Image (cartoon, rainbow, N blue to C red; front, top):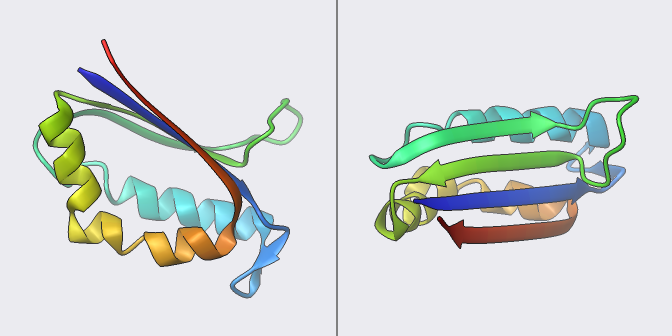
Length: 100
């Protein structure tokens, strides 16, 4: 199994919206990817909650059966279509994949 964790810190304003609105849009777009390919075992997109310590605004925690499933997700056209918006609104991105 491979765990795929991505965190995004967002710009204060981008694409005509503020950070909070863009975070909610990102979550919605990610949620729509939760069943894109076979081999997705767990897929959870969350937005940082006010009042709780957070250094990033949006986090994706996902688990894939194997590297082939992760690769299929990464290459899927619906996932690829997210990249322009995510790139435009993010200030920073961190990603880690690891096998267990």
